[in-house]
Image (tube, rainbow over all chains, first blue to last red; front, side, top):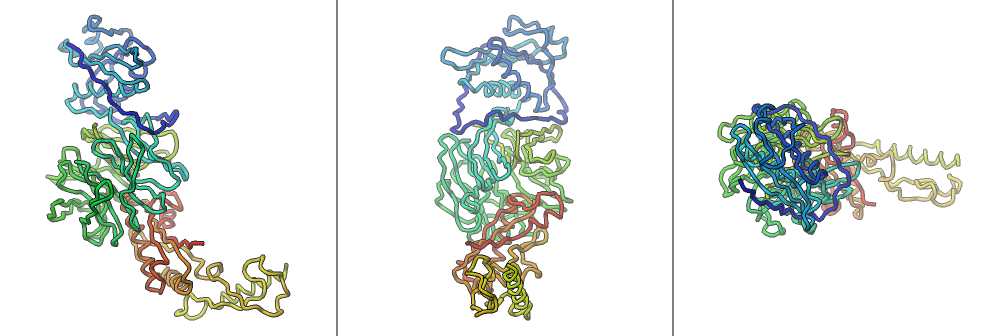
Length: 421
Length: 177
């Protein structure tokens, strides 16, 4: 088995990192079938190896799909050092080994192998390299490789999330790794920030800022920090959503009366109104094929989820029954959508299948808002509350595994999972 | 000093009377003939009160007993129409604005947390727009008011209960200085 070379091409974000922003993560529940895997800390540079080990084991554990087998006492780093019997005895079905070193050019290089303990064969052999200071990125990449090879689904550990941190009168728009670490501040202001939305290539965020004392939509580059105003008409300008090709944004404006949905180019040109209800139409979200918009509307008397084809066909109501529904987002495969369901004073994360119309609740209820899918459709990120604070939370798409992520201080709000890029 | 206090009390009494007039004149406390020390405590030298009363323009906006001192209107859950009990307040502000063309007011719509942030932004805007419309119907110029929404972003009370929520479902009237 030979190594495939993988160079992490992550561009360094222009923003300063938040010093010492350590998270506290709690995991609740477990997947139905957990794969027993032994992760041997990499040989070589022990400090790097320790960090990488923490990231890899943390990622796999949080997915709920793996059971970590204790490697204590055995530490093979090369294929020749592996005795499969040692691991069969411990009940492991997979084994990860390798080495890490700092190269002459200061790049981190990890040589990593994933082995099938039962069949006694190699599954993956790869060199993962990244620039100095991106040691966590190396760990996320290794975790992705393991996850992909053993579950058949694409890994999302290397993706990023965006959210707003509110602390007293200070609002910060933050981008972080999928595990909440490596926070970088995109914008800080004393006025509220809302509704961050990732461009499909992950290079820009659209968001709502109240810095001019009313809601206006901005687009900001995560690499150069440059930003521009997309919509700043009178009243409120909000709810930006990117089309899958990145060429248009759906936004919500009140310039012609109540909140209505418009299309606009990211440079602010080509404004076109697309809903004409006189009700509140908001929270547009494009289908993955770009043909439909999901949105929230109270045109029927209470806030519910609707869908409209962008070529001008009939708008269709999708949610019925008791309770109110908000914040719809398509699943990456376009077959279902996730949303916030409010009933009897509690918010739940809910999913509904387009074909069957069947709704199911994924959480026990509380202040659970703004759900969004990970790019692989297997995990849903949402805003929740615990111990009197706004926190980030995730739930697996089957509802079995949940985790709470506590940021160091303040309330976490308005999270959204970024794309694979 | 005692005299000053007495004369302020007197002004307040007069204003109170003025605002108890029949309903059609709801908002308009007429300019009151005030004894020398006008509302601002540091106005002109405290001349003996009864001597030579000066006819001073008292801005009713600064009068804590005027209906204009009420600067918030409140709503039931998911409702944006100004409620009957708050209509006199909005109408009084409309009349004030129509009589003070240089005055400007900012209308900030707010909501409780039982909705998505974005839905609430729309609802808060609808609340503020409703007040704006009522001001204009009452004689204010369109340019005298600006309506914006903060949705659920600026709660006055932070509890997850009706006692907090009812304070957060409101439109604030904020006059430019």
